[in-house]
Amino acid sequence: MVSTREGFRPWEIFLFSVATLITLLICVGVGSVSLSPITTAAVIWNALWGLPMPEGVSATIILAVRLPRVLCVALTGASLALCGGAMQGLLRNSLADGSTLGVASGASLGAVIAIAFGITFPVMPLGGTMLMAMLFGFLSLVVILSLAYRLDGTLSTNTIILVGVIWSMFVSSLISLIVTFNSEKVRSITFWTMGSLQGSNYANTLTLLLALTVFGGVLLGRARELNAFAIGEDNARSVGVDVKRVKLTVLVCVSALIGVCVAIGGSIGFVGLVTPHAVRLLVGPNHRRLLPASLFGGAIFLMLADLAARVLLNPVELPIGVVTSLIGAVAFMVIFTRSRKKDAHA
Amino acid sequence: MLEIQNLSVRYGALPAVDEVSFTVREGEWLMIVGPNGAGKSTLLSAIAQGAPYRGDIRLGGQDARRIRPRERARWLGMLSQSHTVGYAFTVEEIVRLGRYAYAGMLGGGSEADERAVEDALAKTGMLPYRDHSALTLSGGELQRAFLAQVFAQDPRLLILDEPTNHLDLAYQKQVFELIWEWLAQPGRAAVSVVHDLSLARLYGTHALLMNGGKAAAAGPIGDALRPELLQRVYGLDVYAWMQTLLQPWIAPAPDHLPESAYRQADSLPNWIDKPRPLAP
Image (cartoon, rainbow over the protein chains, first blue to last red):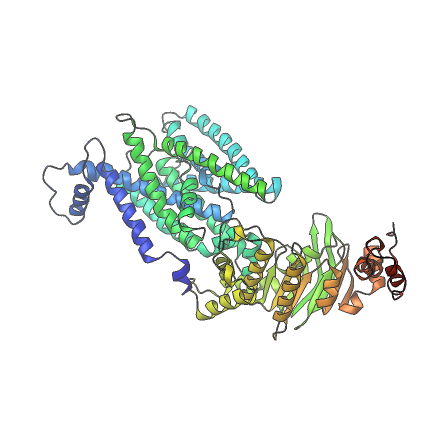
């Protein structure tokens, strides 16, 4: 059967799930009051089924503070990595990602505008911010890609990244401008530029889960088309891919998903760049394996980064974006150097 | 099978293809030839719906614009002259992609898919390479991998854009013979852009001679590639030049030969002209 040979095998799903779960338990357990992963698991298990809590454990810290945060971190990581993987396939460029392309900064701008000018929905308190973040994320993608296309027509790495950098700088200055005049309304600039999932709650978790299920589901369903794009757009058209439609679907889903992540956690850079790249070394470039593996990989990576942000300079807590950007910037340099060398040899 | 009526493609104000009409029937191999910039490749990408065009392209009587992408892929497959695969996909993954147009909603593969992939790999001699990464293949091997993909796709019409441009002579022969074999099956036809007029003449059944975006001649290969037409389009006595190219092989250059060979060279049949300077 084709699907079993190309797709993700059951034992691989199992292995990745176990790794994600263990990371989650460790991350929830570690903190000012540290618990073993087994105790943590027991607390969560008992809470799920309404059983009495183990003796002498402060369940509140775990259930009300750490668990929702770590869950949000995991879901954000999974979403961003999935988006990165999809973009890298679609644009056939291993340096594409929400942060390098400027989608994340665009989404931040949308969120900041929504907050500063009080764009809200009566039912959902975060609805306005989220919709604006999605919209601006998508607009950013359209602007960047059409500008890059205008400049060289082939969407080469260098052009996309250059345009992305310029766009990010432009957007950052706009954000700073708006925040300066609305400082009482908008959370600090650092939140939008560095990102933080401190103080996330279950409502955020649910929103992220919903967004990941809907948009992530669509992206996962486009794995074969993304394979075709990764091999070449003309080839994709030749084998029967509806090129325009798939491109639009992927771009909309990516910007929507990034928009939701940004509205909740600010822009957390480089997760979408580093994870698919690392995962590709592990499971190969086929998106039917790469995308699900990125999902797990992104969750694990961001949970660990969040853990580092919490414990590295304890009691001072770093913004999570600082940790990912530190790792990401180094990884970016390595990938860029390698791809340049490859180009030079070709 | 393929009918083209008054097809025009513009790049800005410049017409790249200008009011071209022709028809390709079952069993035919149409060779599109002409000088650089004649609009050959543009014409091909319009047929494959990769460039916006005016006019009419019909596949099996249907307007090509209205055929959905998957169904179109079952009608026509395209092989480009070169490929730059972005990531380390294996040959088998590339070939398997050829079955995209036949996949169901869930993307599961059928027995027919398996058979088509195996056949295509075997026919093109790519079975030993099935697990090789595309990044490690030579130009010839990569071209055969994509030929296998288009064979697995099993279209009725094959569109080829200078399929052997970067390949050495052995690969050229191999690729053309594989396509020739493929074409022998019922209900098939091929259209290709070819620079090498000898290859075009040898394998083509029909030809479209293009110049400046217009069709200078079209029809059975012998009629469309007549010497006087070629001379007008290329600004060069093509037949004489091809004979000149061959001459060193038939009558080797004198300085490599003993004196007795000169007389032999002089007594060559008179249809081989002496080398002469190119027309300005």
